[in-house]
Length: 363
Image 1 (cartoon, rainbow, N blue to C red):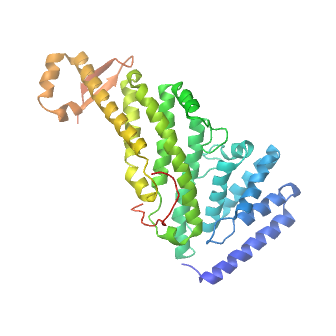
Image 2: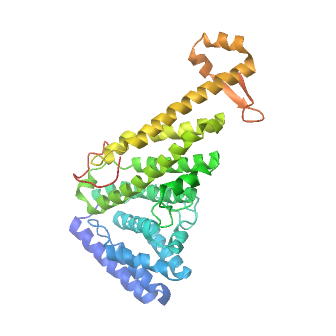
Image 3: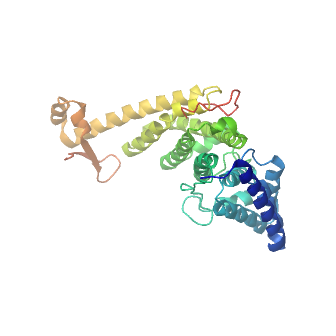
């Protein structure tokens, strides 16, 4: 596996030059400049992220016609899915991530087409593997992780109705709180579930020392850290609202919210390790712990009340003598409304790779 590093770097430079010449000579005039700009932003060089002016050139195509924006995203996706080089793939994802964060609505609209169900813009790179050398093999794990993060970012944006770092995102907390308070319980859970999914994707970051010595990976994690800070705040506002509406939750809804908060709490230690040099967001984790406790108490109380309705107080008292384990083996089935249940017997990152002074957002 692998070629000498200097030889591989030379081959990469030659491939980039050949791609630029091909784009200039063989592409249609309307897309030629786009293809050249994409190749220049996504070179084979593993050591550094694309320069800012290269990213800005890509984003500028979103300020023209919809056809131009569509062609730009199409060229980026073609580059991403046709390459076998880990550095090129990472730079494509980095460019796409910047499109999501900073691009025009028209440009982002092209990218958000079917992010998780196939199609031309499918971001599933779970089998990506560059075995050309040891460094590329290690870098491949970052490609797989970063693709999942960018895709989950798009899923979150669809759930919220706006992009996390978009100018159209409500800027005032009270406006966002008003919008959240008008959501149905099911819609609020869908948003929390998508946001928790984003945190889970971030926590799947590779256990790799590559972060210490590669500026491209470092810049990617820095960018993801900024997204994580925004996600934290969105979760905090929704958990706060959840506390105000607990009395209106059905038993099933309470179980759904409780499951999402447990998943989020399971991510706490990993995020603390990944973003170790930043101030901990204690307010978020305290609100999650409080909401989880209240939901658990409410769920247990309602289950006992529904058992009494279905079985009678004497039978419930008899059951409780055998301890919580027996009661826990009961399965609840719903027949009509939310409150009509019957109890029926069930038959048988540590990430030690961080540079000092990171500014990646609160943990």
